[in-house]
Image: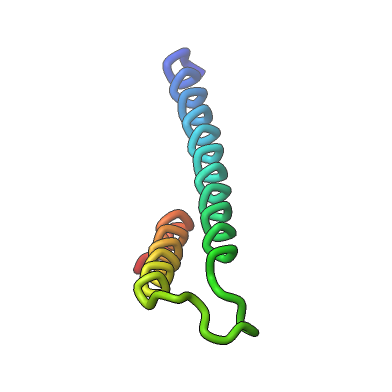
Length: 78
């Protein structure tokens, strides 16, 4: 093997490791934000939920954004 091809293969392997680490960190961050949203959202057994309707809409919007970001992170086309 030529030295140039060895360097190229090594650089590609390093890039793959870096991408895998970043993707894992991104998914962990998404799980953290999702758990924060679940703590804020009203429980299913509670009547009335949030005192303001705008808060519910905002939480629903954030959950939808998280779903879209998870789809992007996993490589799914929307």
